[in-house]
Length: 429
Ligand code: GDP
Ligand code: IMO
Ligand code: MG
Image 1 (cartoon, rainbow, N blue to C red):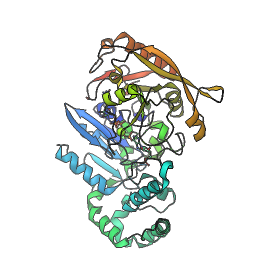
Image 2 (cartoon, rainbow, N blue to C red):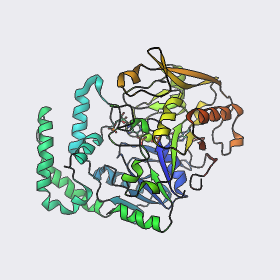
Image 3 (cartoon, rainbow, N blue to C red):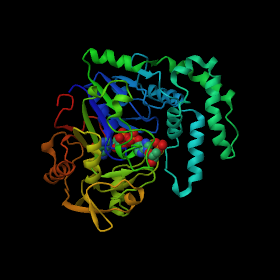
Image 4 (cartoon, helix red, strand yellow):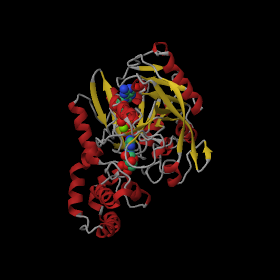
């Protein structure tokens, strides 16, 4: 299998960015296929920290990077992120970045609507990143989106704006907001159009060429399967499909091209935003893990909720995403704990479940059944070979592997690019 698809197998923030950056040096092209700048990926390379939200994580290593049609693209966020990375010495030109010309745009009116809805939802809010992701995907499937290719035709945008604004003006009126200022929107689009168009092209065609030449392609997922709009903890999810299958539809290559599916899995569990979280810890153990793991969101700075490893969830996400093998990250954060717990099942209304039921009320009510293991006092920070890991850490990894019914291909032991243990190379497996 020459190609690799990386996806998050929990609620996001599993360390996808670090692993994609590490794998990118073995790949010829990296493609994002869903989500938008709601993603937040932190890479650490020789002490230098890079934060990415929209650009593929391969860009820092200089690998050809593409933004596929499945992504919703905020053109101003793209411009800002490129400027920020350039100030850190990363070169970004049309030679190493391509943006699909059929990507739908995230507009200021999407951000407005995201904020208005969240503000009105009170306790029922999703806790979105406020980036306009949901409203932009709604307009895509509602067939009223403005897309990257439209930036080359701004003088004939009126009929599309009529359609878009008819929808948004009605929604805005419901929130006592004025109609969309069409002239201001057009001015903002004119201001950014040329910048984006220099990267715009049919990404599917570029990928076809790259594939024909026998190149290795790395598909980079954002968020995680539990945030998938179909398979996640609905309605507390994002608005795209985050499962591996989206790599094909969101980039323009068929499912036979997406290769090895590498699920990124944190050695414990975190979640940012609202929604059920069966193994959540509200005690000092959870607080300690959160502090050691620096569990604060890259995009919004919000504190992430923390809990024990949930093998039920990861077994389920690996199944629905056809995960071939996992990368287990942040094992070092569990160093020094006397005991560690793994959730192996749920109890609900007197029954035992080996999966997460679909109904939101059931998801909120399940009680985890734990298995307890002895922890390890030795440090795993920076370990680069399996043999360097303490015996109890190895036992933990093996037990995780057994319970999720999926092999471990990589283990990550610090934020640094090279602090990674390779057990099976996904590009050759
Ligand atoms: P992503 O959204 O999946 O790319 O993950 P984030 O970047 O949002 O969050 C993962 C955080 O953990 C980042 O700050 C990484 O630098 C850091 N990280 C990644 N792998 C490891 C690891 O193995 N150990 C530790 N301690 N930190 C890690
Ligand atoms: P990465 O790629 C963690 C969560 C938000 C919220 C829900 C919906 O860094 O793993 P949205 O703005 O997408 O409509 O918010 O999804 N969320 C993430 N949580 N990591 C992410 O991305 C996320 N992207 C969105 O917190 O609960
Ligand atoms: Mg993140």
